[in-house]
Length: 105
Image (cartoon, rainbow, N blue to C red; front, side, top):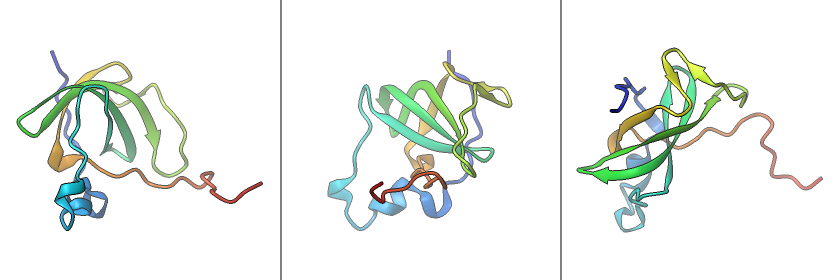
């Protein structure tokens, strides 16, 4: 059984919005894909077990604070290991965290 989650609206971080001009490049989730959504100020990573009718079903594998990148075991009643449903319309791009630095050392 999956846990019902009220995902945050992805807004400008919407995966669908990002690919609207290039739908042929849209990466449809498949078994084993890691996809993301936003929930209460956190990025939630989900490992896809199945993708049915524009909705992925999978396991929560990471909960990452959007403001600083810290990882949590749970946010509210959502926890690592929970099985959730994530509609494609609510998939979100992940934010860059302050410690993410592409500059060479």
